[in-house]
Image (cartoon, rainbow, N blue to C red):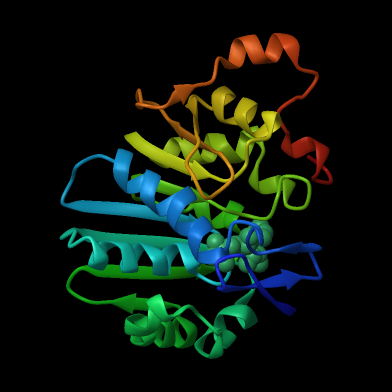
Length: 247
Ligand SMILES: C[S@@+](CC[C@H](N)C(=O)[O-])C[C@H]1O[C@@H](n2cnc3c(N)ncnc32)[C@H](O)[C@@H]1O
């Protein structure tokens, strides 16, 4: 895997296997995580003392680590439980020596613990990296999820983590007020979210490309009229059967 410097000077990786970078180089790894996932999630999530977050998938862990950075920076006093599937065990084992941004310096003990034990816990935070296929991991989750960071590789490269069946599994474990954040603005992804019972919103802020936020509840964002889009579009939601043998 190749180390790549992104627009905000933070580093990501290029995956040969997926022929894609872990982050959008033009947005920046830390900026993308903060602006497309963590900020909207905490802006719109239920106002509870305890939040359960599903981070799909862990990769370099920017979304999990930026969550901790954001909570500290903004003096947010909440209990956080993060569950994060990832099938690349070697990647996690090597994260202790990854060139993270200085913002993560105070998180060195968290990074070391995750890299060694796939687990971290203190009084406020619990993080579990579940080594395995995200589709299987998600089926076994027995907690209700308040926030999903939907951040696999793109639908073209990682389609099984963007299908209607995938989002239906997600829907079963999301709280009624749950928030889904994703960088993807593809019609096929928005259709799949809608067909799985979510309302679909668009968020556009300065500094990064626009994004999709989904939830069952109303959000103070521009809502996409999916029925109207479907009438005008030739795109279709992705289905498992198109990518899996014997299904
Ligand atoms: C775009 S990267 C994740 C970026 C991540 N949020 C970060 O901060 O680095 C996608 C990750 O998904 C993992 N992945 C892809 N398909 C998976 C699957 N079916 N199950 C588990 N992990 C998967 C890859 O190994 C990769 O680490």
